[in-house]
Length: 153
Image (cartoon, rainbow, N blue to C red):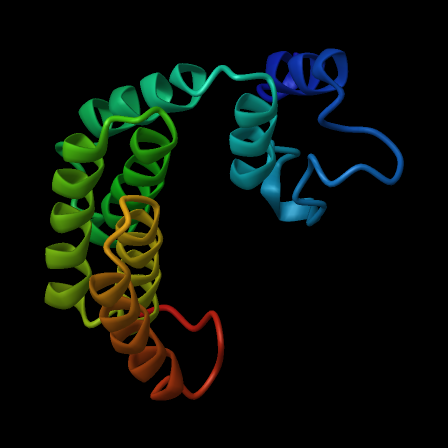
């Protein structure tokens, strides 16, 4: 049995995969895994944000012993976004700070900019316009200094 068969079955039943749908990353080397962003939007649309938060919290536990700080930073960043969508602003901020520290340690300017952008969005949603603008400007400065968009360490 294909190791990805359960995920593929869930994706098909949930409407996350199929011809012309963005639910699959599409590259042969990805093993047919579900796109992280598609899964997030799927949960958001259905008002089931905790379905997005809980797997990320589990992923943090599972990956705690791995020496892959980039992967951990990406999980923390996604978890921060999910927590913000769930209205858990303090958790979102704390997870974002953890991700930011990791990105700064490993020299991941792109990840750092993504986190600052998310902080800016959160501040805007909380009515803190000046703080939001400042955070977006910091993110823009980082994005501007990256030679290749999407480049990661």
